[in-house]
Image 1: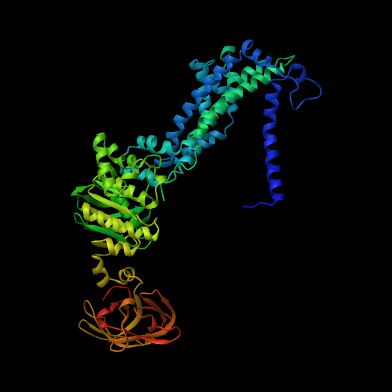
Image 2: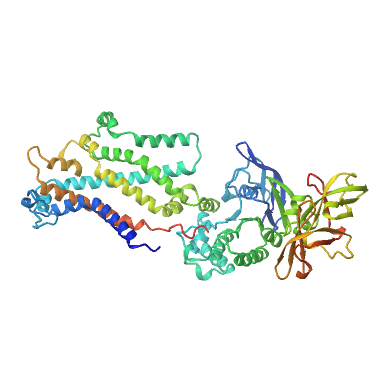
Length: 275
Length: 361
């Protein structure tokens, strides 16, 4: 399609505005983490750093508990992601394809659970975990994260399953493939982008989860990054440089994840299957 | 290779009955085609034979074995879908070998059978490709290959050619006919294309609204249809139906008249006893069965509104006195001219008589 220069200007102007709105906070955090403390707190803020230092990162890695928080977060997020994907896939398939009494009611109930604010169940969950001795354990966070991410993940996975033509499954049934084989050998490769989306969603949900991590984890050595950060913000003073360096470092695993999983987002996977 | 028999097979979706008690026997090695308009239940019936739809009532037997409640994979059938339904992430070889892999056959046997099937279908040089790298015709051949390697007792085809373009469809039709004569396996083929039905079938099953209207060899259905539906469905362009009245009846000979179509009187031999004088009937005559008006047993006349000249043949569309349209085929294009009141000759041996309910009399 040929655009006039007016349309083109409006289009690219609009895109640039959106990019700036989204990108500016990140720019601010990342550039702030390499400024000297003096420049960070100076009255006239600088868009582009005038100074350069890695002292905040040095402090972050050597003088703070950040590496431990990072490790805790990675462990909790990876397990949460793995369990979410492993449970969402068969659940979504069951809701999508299998016929059993109460299927629709159950499906709606699950979606309803997603609409439920997490804070409401915080106190009862605390009591529950206390009884089974899961307070201050990363397992508690994994359980909570999976429970919170599952409803939406099932819903997302189900809509990806709906993109696979029915005949492919039927062909597999005629070919003698059992349900698990159909799921693993046929459907999983075909909805790889969907699995990747669910994985990223679950990972980020866990990575940024603050509320439960702040209540269920008691000891400092088991804190995750969001809660750990809160510790940097002291009552009387805030080490902005350290905070910004920590925030920058916290983005890194997510970026790595996108780089790894992003490769699965290949379009046209089902091309050539039907028609 | 196997016989197939359906005994009072019924299918209901909730309250709606989509297959209303079908009885059918298919001999070993026979090529049977299910035809009918959309929604007649032909695909549903095929899917019931495959086991992809449950059977509400009745019995399905393949090779003398009751398979009504059996899993699709254990019925000894293989199915080729309209949309090919290939596994897009697997190579042609893996696609074709998949059913054998599921049956836990040894790898060298799978390889050998895939190679054999590929040879039959001229797919040898594509074995390592993915389906998306193939043309429509090649994809359909892979789907057929996946069916062949299983060496099923019955092949089921669900409109396998309707996604292909016209030229390829003709090629694949010949290919399927060749395959049937080579493999000599029972094949059941669903189509709405009556050319496919006529050319491929040993036996055609005409379905309407979930019931069988007539079963027979292609020419049998063409020459001796049981009712107006079958008569209209088989043959292209479709048969003309002209409303008429019985003037007199004597044994199995009826004298009919249709003044509004310019038909004074015509003697028709009926199948059984001729309908009583005064009954409303319709005469059926195929476009290709009109003859020159001179020397014909009788004539119909109408005003030609459109002439389609296809080269080899021409079709005249004429309007009768009652407003009905008549299609007439001719080998000679110059015979017809638009806007002219014309008489079209008919021979009594080529005329069918149907009663008001559309039953052949």
